[in-house]
Image (cartoon, rainbow over all chains, first blue to last red; front, side, top):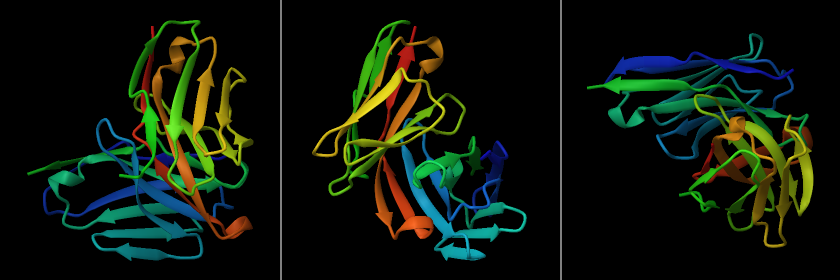
Length: 113
Length: 118
């Protein structure tokens, strides 16, 4: 079945780079997503990558996709305290009318000054 | 701000009761999805509605049901509440770009309704 795995915690210092990793199982996923959730809030789409791409850069965010290993990573350059949040990796599921998202359990990023 | 609103923000119910949660989707989006996020977990897909019809369902029992209205707003109903139903319920309205296997769906999430079942 479909499954998305993430490491649960990451702690970095302000100004360092953060790398959050994710593995997924559904090779038919066309798009993969990164969402951010701040305390008491809903989910904010950070970025996404199409499955035929290896890399996507968007300002401080870099997404790397290794489709062979079904591995996705999110790199945040120059991490700030405001980046402290839970980050979710998600894959789109074609088994659910094509638009359901399957989420990992989330990685809690803690940024210290 | 995504333009997706949910009500109420918080709700406390007792086991066995029924609850209705509401969602107003972003203007122009005809597809809405509901997710359950238990504490410390990622969101889990409950079901999706497209033009007032259920269009996909996750692994949730029939006591979870929904409605979508002509203005694309939506309700999630849960009957016979259980303690494990305590969670954050998220609504997402969807903008679908492209078709078929290459479709990209951009889901805009509301802030959620925190349901506590005692």
